[in-house]
Length: 99
Image 1: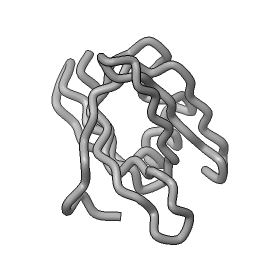
Image 2: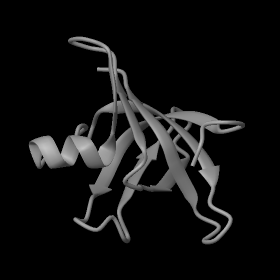
Image 3: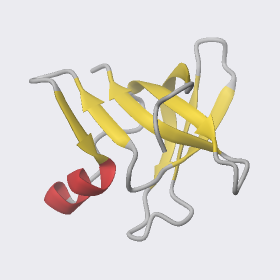
């Protein structure tokens, strides 16, 4: 899923579940107004880290290398998302870690 015409929101992560096959994997967080957002995660979700060095990797590649999620509960991230036309879920296209 490409980033073209994706919407973005900054959230503080409140829940995260990544399954080995990605089915049912999700990220939940709240924006600064307290509104809750739930995003489906896919193997092709791009993860952008700004520190210690800038990097852009697919979520599936990160998990294959480290076996642990690249972000944690309580961390603030910017999620670029689209509605998946087959499931009508908000799907994370890119997640930018701000910390």
